[in-house]
Image 1 (tube, rainbow, N blue to C red):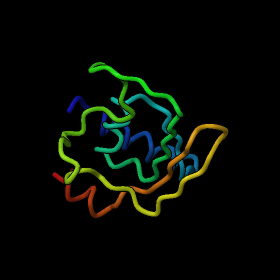
Image 2: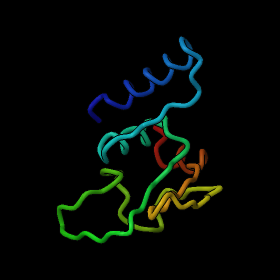
Image 3: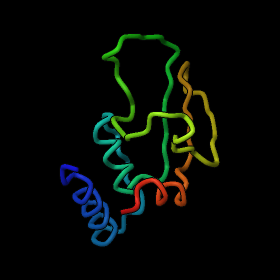
Amino acid sequence: EDGVGPCLVAVTSLLNEEYGANEVLWESGGGLTARAIRAGVIQKVVGFVAPKLVGGSGGYSPVGSMGIERMSDALELEDVTVAMHGRDVAITGYLSDARMKEKYSE
């Protein structure tokens, strides 16, 4: 790890302790998103799907490398809801605390 995870934990702790923030919006690329999930600072996930198709081996991914290669190892969302925003679909869910601890506890 590159030290980003502990920084993310420190930032979210500071925002909570100093400013009373109990929610932080992470609008980020795949690399930071993966680090934030591994650091345990992400509980709620909102993913948007546009009605467009793209392809290619170097395509964009909403979540960077998580070391998860099989669907059976995937982090599942709980309490999932789906909503339309214009033509886009928003999928909202919560990461399971137990599954996160099992996968990423040291």
